[in-house]
Image 1: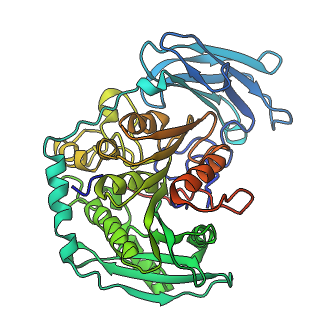
Image 2: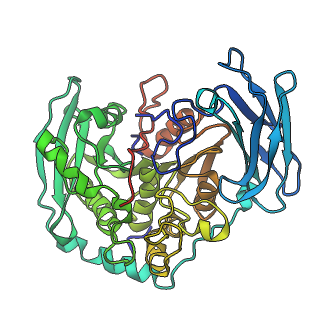
Length: 455
């Protein structure tokens, strides 16, 4: 079975993917004025250990709340305990614990002026490396994907490549496309140091949304090339990357694509997205400027899930960087736990009732199940207050890996990368791609995708 980073501009708002319910204060990030934190700096605890959350009011807050509502939840899903509190000298505490591995989340909301003050949010990881996934591996999972990928090599690549203007004189940039299944084509941007040969490959998987559209959404491919990579930024869709205004209007037909065809494993939209990733490997490894050694699969959010899935499906991939991976733990809501984006995938048309057909079909598309087949080194990251790819789902994916692995689990980080990840990523790429140490260079950060609407 071919089961075996791109790093996409940071989204600084909390609900970066648009797949989670909007907070009452859309314009105020969590922990701006109402701040929540844990009494352990790393926010990690043992089962049964008391967690003390500290709630404080920041200096120069626009108002002073008299009462705040708080909830302790199972990582934003099942409510475990709730109440109200008042601040004394600008401080208060909330205590809780879990008697099983998981993530205990505190959310604090002022009863008045919520729009101006925002919320406080903190997560505590309880024996995080013992969290087990809810995703069940179908018995014929390997056979299904063997069959889907077996015929790819018989499809002529039919590559098309055209130069794209960009300001860096030391970088070559192209728009490329190549044949995929069902008469579709896969698209991407290719960049490399000008005139260079014998380069390691970096394939960046796309964040959620219908993009990129022009270099304004794909500037990271140039940054990856500047690090010394033969770099490809993939698109999930059969659409040109350099689009006119008329072309752009057509993208609306893809709105809600993570839910299209989800009740049948053969019609689900992601089937051709997954095979398209492998066609990207086919194309990149066919090029004479590859060094025939390293093929790094990277991505964030949807791209983080895709980066792992590609490594499970294709043994040519040699290492993975996966930032806050999505597409995992679809069945979490069946157990009072969160799922990763796209949220509520398994629900039927009423968006409340689980659909057995969707549950069965999407088990073949769950990052957790692919993680079980990844054999190459993986660097992952997760944020303990991420609403789009909650840490429980990230840990379920991570704990399913049996390969060499490292996780940067960052307290008080939402749907974004933590402050240590840049340094960890640099060291990982030096070790597994053989590039020069990029410390001090302008390394690209994580582009987490665009809003998605469910049809």
